[in-house]
Image (cartoon, rainbow, N blue to C red; front, side, top):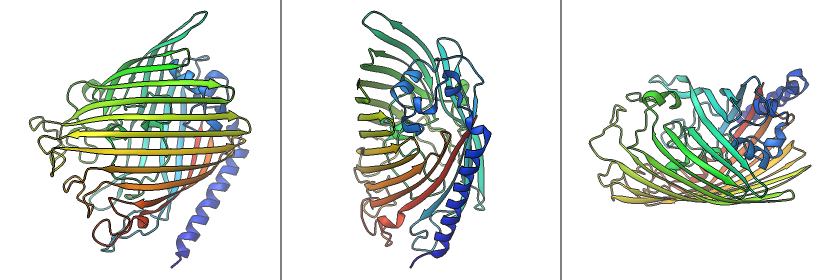
Length: 457
């Protein structure tokens, strides 16, 4: 049966967003530029492919690799906010309970403040602080907001240019694996760039640890080089973001059930190698990366247990990116495959075995015309070893989840984006139908997501 109420709400929200975009288009503030654009004197399109944040162009990548130091120091503040609406295809389970609260309702999602840019000729930073309006629910089901640090990256860089060589040598201090990377094929800045904050079923439930579980949970320090715009290499090490590094942990701490801290043992290495080439309006990258990390378990009260041993995760990824950038056309494509081998000798996470694997494949392509009108299509496929403890919500005890995400978006001005995204699941937790043993199909989790994304400087 067609849900006319939900459709009417969706159309009303779309109208509100469109009117808001037109109003902002006519406001004088839209002539202002973001921090980095203001610092360099360049437009947003110079750094972001087709104006689509956060996809970087070759110039944007060089700006980041050079430590955010191009141009002159300026006012280092910007703000960003998102409004959105989520609609789940079947928003109740077999018992009649809601699957996605706030379903079909327009909401104020989140707002961020950025402090970023050039500090000296060799030192720069990118820091983000975010308020999430729908962070978690209390015992009475009331939504609680949360304000905390978000992505952070501090750099010291030297560049040596000779007659036949261009060498960038840099160091980075950051708080998420791959947040320091400059390609949108690695996890931290990869698609989807926005997703529902309230849906419990709108994305794969399980993925390799490098794809987000350690974000804002660790502090990473490392060094990198980029030679002749051809070879990139990096080695970083990660430890728990506590103590003096707790300001990078997004407010997570021991004993907080809503924001538990993930504790890792010792120094955990990450490596990255990429080969790049540019010709005319084209540029391409192929690369590989890996992370070894040992994670302590948390007890029932969200305190770390240092006496039971660790679960060891070994992630190896392969990625590629292609861009065609020639106005009025912009085309970008990214691909990533990650295989994670897990060793759990004390059965801290898994119950059926002491070893397991998890594999993730993600593909995405976008086309943007005149830096205003765009469309994207992505594919994801998660597979892995079955386990009755780790994947207890699956009737097949499987993490396998597969689907497609088409999206259309409009960028009326360079600091506003309005988009409509639909995620269709062809498999969820190991099955196309009855994946939970209670009759729910994968397509019941299909999620429509309408968003309004704006920044002000």
